[in-house]
Image 1 (tube, rainbow, N blue to C red):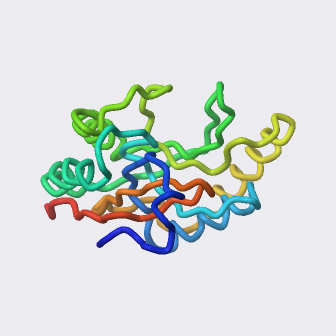
Image 2 (image 1 turned 135 degrees about the vertical axis):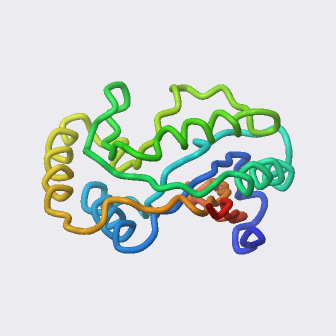
Length: 185
């Protein structure tokens, strides 16, 4: 899949990430919850394998490295567990159980060569629900997220079978550049 042409190159930032979108009813629930917690957000529920990073090469060259590793990695299941808050940033997120170790190994294997980047925080696989909220809104948003998560009756697992290479823009809109399939097990 080629990168979209509707955003001119001068509006694209040299900031890339590799994400796994969460499919089906679980992804829809998470998008709805994120919009409820942060109405200004235009979400697409995902787990980042490579958090946002600048690279010293073209996105196509970085994509080749991401594709080679992703397509050799076996697909695996990811389980979503409980709601948590990162203490420094006050980001509200869903913790991952099963599959978190695979994501850590995949991140470590990919954060080399063209995709290496000095990350501001240690890699912690998770699904962001709300970020950059005013401090006084965090506790109420956390409580609402926990209540909605308890009420959710759907499947809390998904198969990590595809990854998408994305690029940020000046308008903070993420563009899908390329999609890769993990190896079927």
